[in-house]
Amino acid sequence: FDVMAHLTECLVSRRSNPITDFYCLKGVELVFEYLPRAYRNGEDLEARENMAIADTLAGWALVTSRPCLPHAMSHPVSAFYPEVDHGEALAALTCECMRFNIERGDEETVRKYCEIARIGGKNINSFTKEEALKSIDVIKELLEKIDLNVRLRDFGVKEEDFEGMVRSAFSTMRGPIEANPVDVSDRDIIELYKKSM
Picture 1: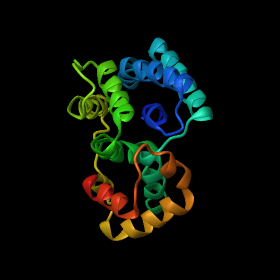
Picture 2: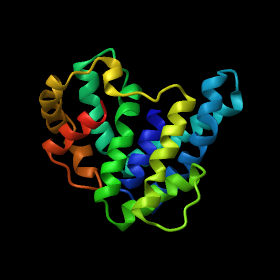
Picture 3: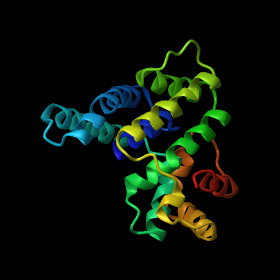
């Protein structure tokens, strides 16, 4: 799931650009199509090859753009709870971060989330926040297909650690926080952790 997180975050990042957007949108398309197949059957070489291409596109996007809020929040989760894999933490956090960005985002951010929803199979009639929320649905559907529709509580994460996790995010992940398309405060991050429980 880290590949999808890189792609969707770099797409909406403040550092995105037309080349990054091209890489990200194609990568998102490949992940939706091939990640469930690769997950179901590790011997499916076509699926694995296309996931490798998606991962390469995500890597290229990272060169000129930057991941944002889900990555900034996920690394402290794994630091405080080392048994939580990076992809698991991202799976637990991404949808609430998307909702936050859509609700507070500008037209460009909303349009990009609509594109994710469209690629994921949703009918998008206009670039509105309501339509953009469909991007959360397609990500949840993907997570269901790969048995990763999880919450932080599933890993034993405790609210008493949120303050420390926020301090960690701002001290070690300031770049992704600043790249987020919407300004975010420490209080916002605590609320997002709570909503991801």
